[in-house]
Length: 261
Image (cartoon, rainbow, N blue to C red; front, side):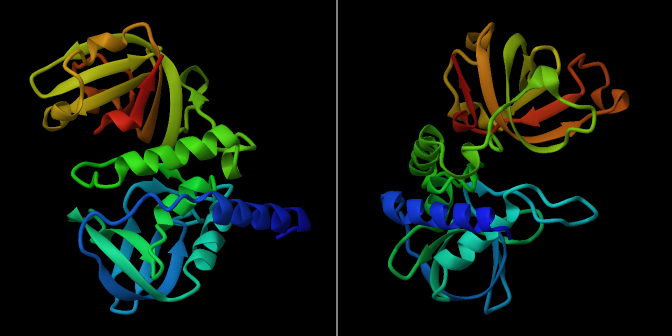
């Protein structure tokens, strides 16, 4: 790492140690475990062999499966190693305990009660993600991210985490994105709400998640500039069938993944 990179990393750690409010406390019993290895900014392995994916945050990806390393991935990984310097940690397993990779979904805490997810967000090295039913700390983590964003800490400072205009999406765009666009069309089917941003991106809310949203959704968003976050995929004409929605699609599961004005 360059001297400038070391300075920024030290600054992020310093900011975190000062500004983390310690508000994100466990809401359910936690389990004492031993850290074996930090795999990346949002994944660790335990002494008992389990791999733990942090609930509520997404950090830049290290290089894998032929994809290049994302800016900020090294900083996030180093931050986790520093924060969890003592391998005696605690985890709070989510209501949904595993992801589709069979990793344990959990909140991670130091022995002193400090929340790893809150610290990452507060340092500006992660972005919040929200997947029901793992919502216990969602509001708290939301505020941690908003404070870091307002202060321009970490990757918010240089625009790395800034929203991408959907009108400027490149053809190869995939993966996790924070997007911004104007809602130009909404539709309802028996199984989904559909929200289109500038005619380029389809946002889908499945029926099972309607209960988390206001009754006026999705029509109340028409004409509003909206910011949304999640994993962007590309659907071929065959996959879209006759739904007539744009090929880029992003699934929204909770209101904290979406804001408008």
